[in-house]
Length: 179
View 1 (cartoon, rainbow, N blue to C red):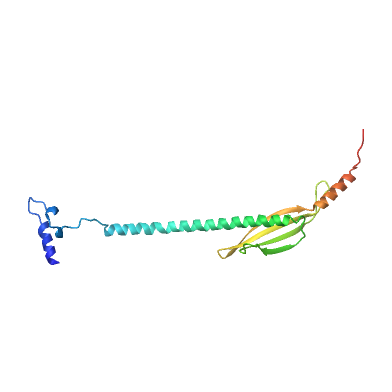
View 2 (cartoon, helix red, strand yellow; view 1 turned 30 degrees about the vertical axis):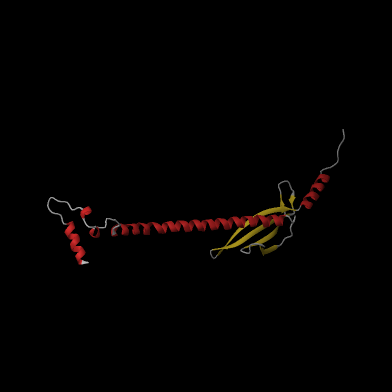
């Protein structure tokens, strides 16, 4: 090992007026000309990566969380519309409160509440009767907390309104006059 160093020094020492020529050196003593990164360059690169990587990871995590939230809310909205349509198909539902789970997705639960709306006086002395409010709520778990979405609508008793319409026509002198 020491002999090799001495040979290398011998070939690389230049005499005044002469340049050392690697081509004239024997192959076993040629200097390795491959370049690499210095320690300073590696440390700077690691510092830049360590500064920029956490915000990038946070951005990806926040994006995934936002996508999950949007997916949950969209699913809840579709289930909410489905359940509301199911209740509306009953026609004029009875005053009641129900709860349950959806068949194919037990992660989401629902509750329906049908409330009787009290008759109110209208400006012309008409009485509004047979009106019920339906409240459908869908619940789901997200990050150890319960989230919910509700939908409200009003339904009227169509049989009652057709009976009132007939009574109004008869009371208003429903007879026809001929010319």
